[in-house]
Length: 127
Image 1: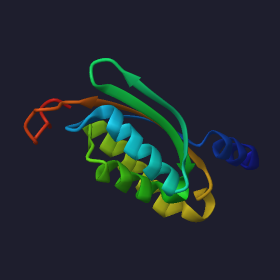
Image 2: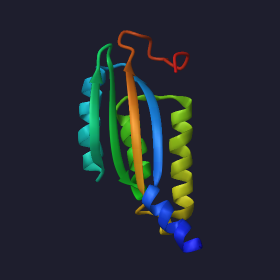
Image 3: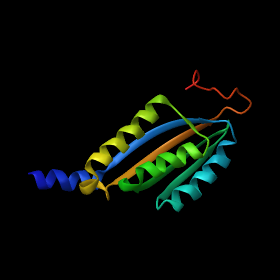
């Protein structure tokens, strides 16, 4: 039974739905993220650019690179929602504690980005 649970966990991996605000052009941010995700060994599955300065990117990466991917999101200038930060922090902490057995597990991220161009730098009251 334990073997079946482990195989199922490896096949399903982690699925994260993240939200973020950016003070730059949202489609431009997604283009930056596309290159950064791929440079870290990830795979971009889809990109969407919606009216009203919103965009989304769906990507996958090996769980062993979760800290690097978290850094990519921050380096892109995104302000992740509190829940998104918690999700990424939990993933990184769990991975650190179980790296030997979970390093290759897939992580799928669906990231929705909303541009708040022209707003003050502190956007915490919006997220």
